[in-house]
Image (cartoon, rainbow, N blue to C red; front, side):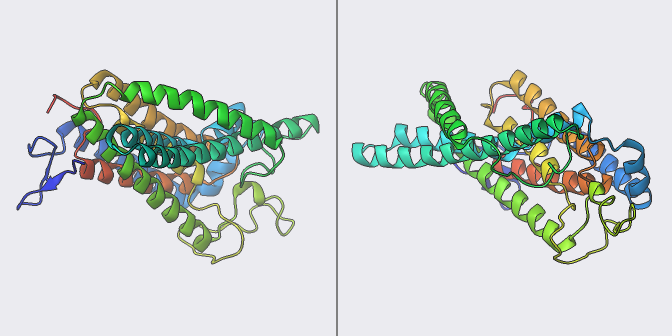
Length: 327
């Protein structure tokens, strides 16, 4: 396994021993996103209620699409990571019995992630369809967590079929990679698992600690709209409410990490995946405000936290979002 190293000056080195430095393009892009993020937080500090009042619509097709299907960034990163680990084990372990056991174990973890991905997608979809059948807004009571409102055999059979098909794709994708690419991808997979764990733990703990009411809950509490509103910097403690920060926005931004599963030689795909990841983070955040599941400050703080985690992880991996040249 090839990890990045650190020299006496604290600079990371890539797998070839070259000094890894943040590019001017990365510095500029990260700085611009930080400025936008803090400007958005400043606006939200004073106008959270106004923004929600102006844009909230639980019938929004845009909001419902991203609510139903953009919450899968974390699961997709983990699925890809376990697939990479599985087929790296298959390639490197010599003992036949041990190779089957360890590869099978990693594929079980991948299958479990597929189950989780489909649980969210099916739950939100069935809730939306149920709302439509009752003539109520699509996004009502469909913003907090997955519920078992779908046929379990459907989820398990779909997860099994998708895992088998995608495992075949990953196997064929990796089998002809050279050892340098495999070592890089394995490191990317392991760091990706850590990124998801850190992001989910950080956002989850903050949700519990802040205890903030969601915008759509404002019309159902104390009989008065906005009666339970608190600014983003106010901690309410554990009360069962979990608006701040946004979990969907976290997962939307985690799509950006998929950039690092692209081999370093494929610069064109790196560009496309980076643009896709940034777009998913921004659009998911905007959709959560639109559908009334979160305040602007909820999605802004989540974006700042998760974007920073991914950026720092890329420095540890010694990989640029888009490589300027082959190392």
